[in-house]
Image (cartoon, rainbow, N blue to C red; front, side, top):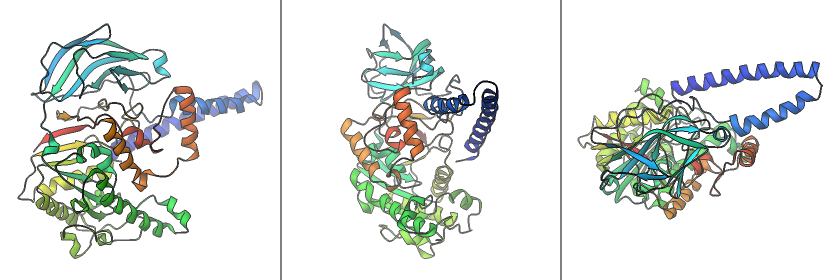
Length: 460
């Protein structure tokens, strides 16, 4: 996480501690002046209420407007919704990405159940208690005549349609930058599985937080080394499920959460925080090409940038797919895009387009909200983002299933939920009507397996 999200978490935890302290004092007073057993009952009821309705990490008010600007070549026209049907007078031929801007206001039920809008056979969810400007994703749908039916909310004020034209980027040479194994699958499995010419480069081994492997009798360092080997293997093997051969996959072998420190001291090696290793060559033996850092194995920023420059020169991509530097707060994701841009400054080959993705957000850990299989509404943007064009290609049911299976191949997305999360899901299922897919227990099976994938298009 970057500094902004750390500040949001710090403020959230401080407010939570204050609320708990006030509640504890109130319970003590109830126990002294009313009945000794009543605080115990209230604690249980309060915990259930918290897990059902207040456990989401939402670091902004649901009454805040989303703030999006679009480029000058975006078609932006007023439209109207009459008797639950969208009426569009403009000609949308050739516009592949379509967004419906409207103002949503939750009903009283929408404070306890997730407000959503039904779009034909699609559904797109928003924050409980929503009251502000939001953006529905109509890409892949026939906008004119589309049924638009709000549930647990109402549509207020002017409605506008924003439409953008994009080439099919999967017909161009594509290089995917994955900070960790699984980032390429989460963001773009649907696109790389249909791309004509694609390569994937994964920057880190993914070795940290390996406590679950200690049950095998391993100490912390050995467990981290095993996890790093497994996830490095995932980065090379899982793409084959999407038709990307091993010789089109590169594992650089740097260490998790060390990329930002490397960037600040470009010539200083930063080994693993947990595995005890400091030689990136330990997971490079299956790479299809020789890279600059193969000579010394040093985990330095200079080596990382040189490796990426060599990968770009080798595959000569027209399009780079990389994390969104303003929207995705993960430290390694931000540093990965920084490294890619520095590498491009060194190469004779120059990609023409950046496709930016966000697998994490600053403000909302549940986005995309709602059940798996539905569309992806635009994420919260409480502070303005650059006015990039958007590209939101669709995935049919078969490709969504393939994407879910690709995620299932990733060791970091396997395993059962902790007891606390399992109880939370049971409570939310019973009281708040939430649903999770059968394809996997990790939250990414709900968030990433959707009818859309979403990218911000930035020309270089």
